[in-house]
Image (tube, rainbow, N blue to C red; front, top):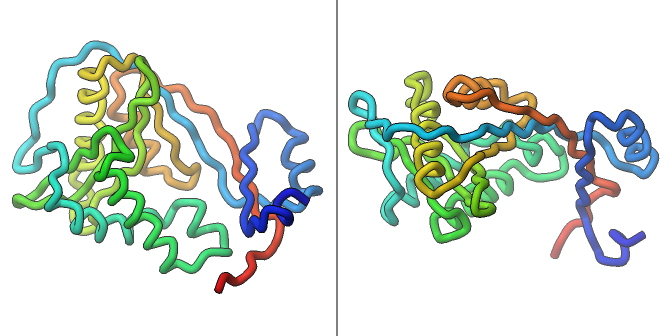
Length: 212
């Protein structure tokens, strides 16, 4: 009723998978399961600064990196719930992530780190400080042509160093259960055990109406 009054086309409901009856209640209300997400949390011990490895290095983004990062973002997040929802055009999903990384570079994130190869940015990771002691990894991706070189792991290492220098004691990241590569990279790089918390995202409650 509220969604109809407010002209909401898509409404998501996040539930804890440990509550067995929640999904059934959500389904009776008209929701459908679209995603299972996993939240990983890692304490940050004191660590020495890690230099770049080989020809690839990490650094804060520059303004002239943004067009390249947008191009990478448009094709790199196909595991997200928006692509698997079924109610969004893929082109609009591509545009969403282009806008997301552009806004992150413009101040939505506290920092966007990039990894470079052959002098050009080939991947990114956004860093968010949510409180005086807690950090969060946002968007992260590596250009498909440069995957398999552990550049994603290098970005995570650089971000953990960045969060440590900002005084964070813990950092978290949310990813999809289907994105086994991202989960494995995070858990492999973390020097302390990670804690995981699964949850599910359901939606929508009604077909989306076309917009003029």
